[in-house]
Length: 419
Image (cartoon, rainbow, N blue to C red; front, side, top):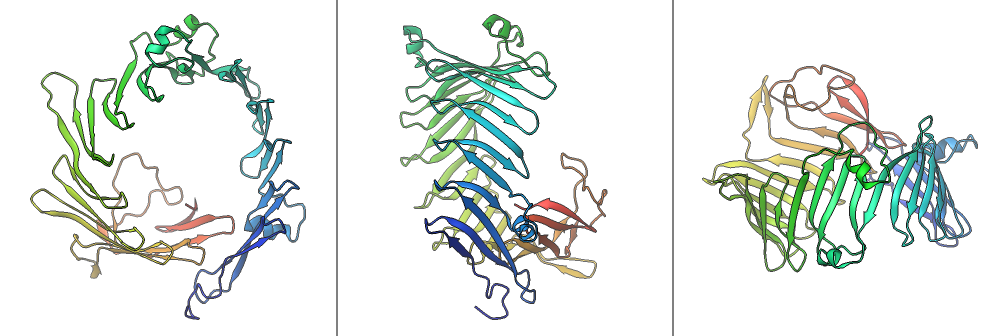
């Protein structure tokens, strides 16, 4: 590796104790070749049984070197049977769980003041979930009903299986099951009110909380080998699926509900390579999409689409570094444009630091559309307007030891959780 590379002298090290447990992971971070190396240590502590009881990320580990009172990111405690009893996280807070002799979690508490209890029947199946928040009376959020063992249940493969689930949204009836346990028919009934529900024990009282309609029924049909062949949704729309002799999806067709509707093809002519990756497919509107992969590692290196008459829509070409990070993305189907005395090529490039974190992205950008579900930028609302096609200045990314990324958003920096 060249000495002027940012990756020179930045190995990943692992430190193990005599039991072979990794107690430290050491990474050397450098953003640019001229930057000094930043040592980042992730620390883990294990108990006598070899269970992880504490861990610190590089940020808190560095603070703990000068202040012993700095807590770990996560502390855990286990029972004698290795079931997790409690955890204390700097992000999620503390949680405590109580398990039965059979291993089921029967009660749980957390730092928000919530207390949940799960009731089980004699077969150790959950039958009710109760929850109480701070200052709120206990409520039954879920109930589970199971089929008896009789001829009627056997005809639907329901013996001993869940047939009714009352949840915060309403009630789900599992009308029929397959031999392998797959759901063949289910009906969803929604609650009359949007307020939190407290399910009573009586079935009649529970039904009174639901809408009086027939419910939304979905029917499914499977092949003997388990592939979904047909599906009819609550509106009566019918989907049909066909497969190759290898069990791979070959085409999907849809018939909308209503008289006189003809079957439409959603996707067809799917072709796969020896690794099971899709090489080509044809959409219902005639658009053909082709995928190209690197035979050495199976990474996608090309993605093209064209209309039935051959008109190209896109032709993406990907390049990667040795560890699989995307270095560039080029759409050769797009022409080279000129704006504001600048040449705009349809190429996007990406740069990474020694920890494979994105540090810079460049390429053309499109003007953001008005309206839609996207939230406005929290720091520069409204964001300065951009031309329909602009070169796009490089967007730098900076990642802290706690894996928080700062990205350049137009004219302001804003924090963003790292992917």
